[in-house]
Length: 205
Image (cartoon, rainbow, N blue to C red; front, side):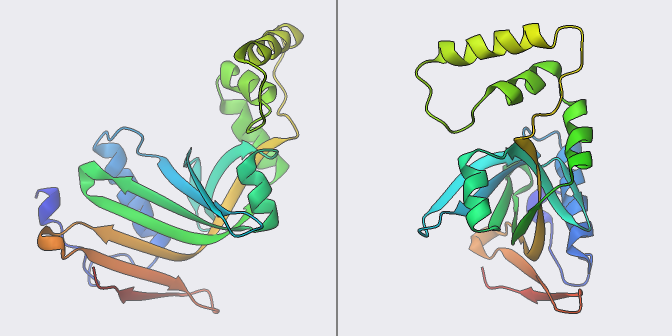
């Protein structure tokens, strides 16, 4: 079956949108799509101005969708003022997208430590060296700091910087979008109810 023949149906979709997302995500992996784990993260500043950037999904379970960043970054500052955020996945090769809305909470220090330990050493050094989103006089300033950290931690593990860690977006809305010819796209929206169950509705394309 080609992707264009796929039908997103209320009768076949998983009633748990987290599980349905996992199925779609696995299909993106199996299709060997580049950056299958890339998602646009949208945040809002204190004065109501939106901002978006692409980050990578590093975990998903019943708690939500996890990504990691510098807690001193612009995105982190906006999330501190307004924890509500949105994620968008787009997989052109599958002609699908998933839109997710909810509020973020920081992951535990243990969870951030465990993930940081799995990162390549260069990425660990980079996370420690970069004052993310801040103005640099030039690139040499950053490269000098990287060199200093390589020397400082030579022969030892690189500890996770306190200013670096994870966020988990806890979803309250998850929309699955599937391309259909003639712009008659399938859109199924799951909304979280107060009792913890999910309501499913079909939206017009």
